[in-house]
Length: 51
Image (tube, rainbow, N blue to C red; front, side):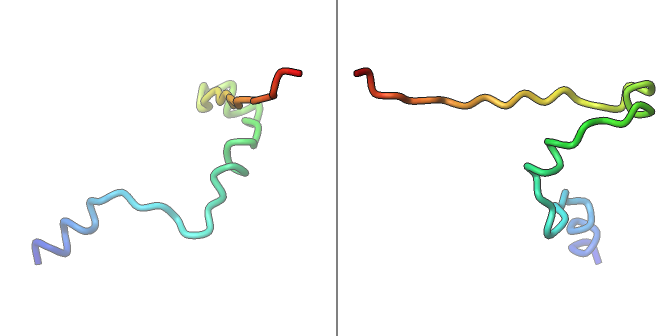
């Protein structure tokens, strides 16, 4: 019985969840008003050969 309890306490990720899509969603006005949002920054490295 203890093993079953330990499994339930472990974090899980929902199947089919698209992280990129979730990160690109804007917070609603109500979420902003309540402070229930997180700023997300996207960093990309653009490598270009000097000519």
